[in-house]
Amino acid sequence: MAMAGLYRRILPSPPAIDFASSEGKKLFTEAIHNGTMEGFFKLISYFQTQSEPAYCGLASLSMVLNALAIDPGRKWKGPWRWFDENMLDCCEPLEKVKDKGISFGKVVCLGHCAGANVEAFRTNQSTIDDFRKYVIACSQSDDCHVISSYHRGTFKQTGTGHFSPIGGYHAERDMALILDVARFKYPPHWVPLGLLWEAMDTVDESTGLRRGFMLVSRRQRAPALLLYAETMKDVKNVLATVFMSLPLDFAEFIKWVAEIRRKEDGGQGLSEEEKGRLSIKEEVLKQVQETGLYNHVTDILSSQNLVCLTKQAMGHRDSLPKYCLLKCIAAKVGWDYLDREDSVLSSMAIGVSLDPDL
Image 1 (cartoon, rainbow, N blue to C red):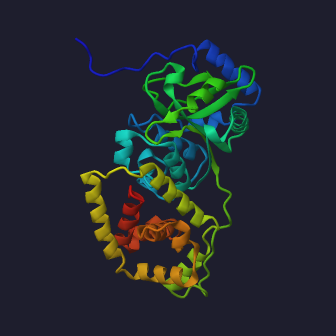
Image 2 (tube, rainbow, N blue to C red; image 1 turned 120 degrees about the horizontal axis):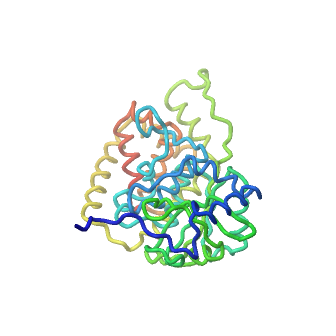
Image 3 (cartoon, one colour; image 1 turned 90 degrees about the vertical axis):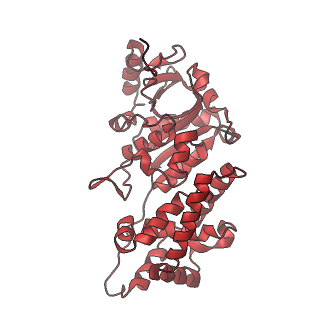
């Protein structure tokens, strides 16, 4: 009797070399000896299998964020703060990712939203020599990691676009170790770096843009903001101090997120389900606008010309300043505070972060 479904795939070799094979182990040992496996150990400590067939981008990013010990600032389960695929929803609705996957630009967006420093390079914006340089640099350190977006067909593998972190580099053979997050399908494997570049130098049909790679690292944060009792007399004083402390490039980040979303979602119609969600969010927004906290923050931002609410810098949609405002509140005041003190505002912050039309 035939069994339903599929159990793994045979890794096409060549061009790939199974990490657990004799040759794969030899490459690993030599690369360790040459100092180009330093990033591997943190990554392997947090290696995860994508929980959905289309979650390769989310799994790769959550694995890297945990390897970099970036605190998500909100709870995963129980008392624990931890990055999980289902928490990476600020740039694309999870339902949409589950159905169609996620683009290169939106994975980069998610990395920024999660608090990481992300440098993204499409293949038409870089060279293979630059790529090799970055792979070597991150393989010699555990302070940064490379996530590659590539087409599986180049390696004679089944499937199309895929994301996975690069776990190491073998200099003599010029090979990179792919820690494939679809572990139910293929094991980790070594591939020629030149062939990996060819696999990245392909067009994502959903966006019409080239694939590429991204460097993910921890942000160099400024000292924590201290609030002194003698200067913090009321809510307005606290919020004014918080918003005055936003990073200088915060407006550019909001503008960047908006541009990515418009560019990749432009012209695509919304489903009836998405329209329904948007109408609910609009109704919640009306409730939010009636809260005292919203009015306090709006007054502060408009009166002091802070970076978060400059329409000219961020676009012309009325929803953008609201999106920015709620993102600022969530990031700076804290999710726990919003959940505890103003559940309506918290709900709106979450809702807007899922808005596919921003």
